[in-house]
Image (cartoon, rainbow, N blue to C red):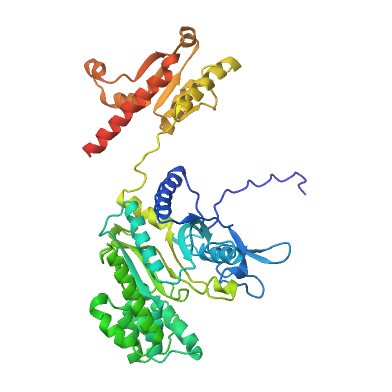
Length: 507
């Protein structure tokens, strides 16, 4: 037997499935975007709120624990007191818990916004992650649909603040009550039909995926997919199916309003829904938001299980090229609606609420497609190189670095192996540093520094072919008194900025 100790296995570095590392560019792009969103929300009078990543699992609404482990859709663990906790699935359920817990201290209507990561314990896929960021705004304690109308206007203003021009987006508005009225009108009212109504909701939620023909099958006998799997339908007859498809197929509300009102006539909830849609339409029109920005659209079917009144969706209408090279409409980047039942779960009394959520990652992708994000470039740091490693020399280099920083210039002193000077310049090149500061013994004796314009130097090395051109070019390296270091670096950075501006205008 070999008694030699086995060499320990090297730990394999691996990213968990469905999660991503975010690099500097993405982080800065998100910060730039969320700052603009936050500014709009603040102008509307909304205040920030932050809730923890974990909530007790039973507070997460429909995502409740099963008998063994509450892992359906959420990431969960048991606390030391054997209570189940889960990473938040969205930002709305934590808000509902916060409002209920602090109800006596909160001033109603309570207007708040929140940004943060949410977690889904679902199978990951292309563009589908288990951790992603949302940015929500909500009004709690406002029963009138004027609060919903304001949400729609704020969504429109947010998209425009991000640089998405009119014609490239649309806020589409529907009302859950209208669908309830249609279902009641076709004989699906009452508690005994709750299961069938739920099947209808799930069927029409597949409209974008399967089209009217596929939804008709799911509303009727059922649908078999390409693999042969059969999904049982809601069991409606042809007349019932036609009325549901009429509702979700409406493209022009003004043209269809009369027929829709006739369809829900005799149902109190349906009539109320139509009135609310008309009221929202009148409010946004009065405020200057025409149908090119906010449109009443009964085909919106998002989250109909969850919402109790108006629902709205922010859709980007421009084309993008997908991974297959095909032109497709970008589609939804966020939405929301009225959820009067969520806070009430904790309170035992009605608490009206409405709000919307922006999918930050998806919207960031859209803005990159439009060239609206990352335009405000971050300049890499000026590099102060190190020629001597004694304490006195290091102190000088650090002092130069701090002087640059104090003047508002991004700067760093080289922290690697200083003995190989060539590696310092290679580092500066790979890092994209605009300027390098060099001071050896000779420069120190003369009280000067060498200031190297790395951007200009790189350009000159590729473009200049004769001495005349060299003499006419901007100087790529110059010597300056230590006292003039900051002023000279500012001068070079300003010249580089002017070059970038000229290049951008020439494109």
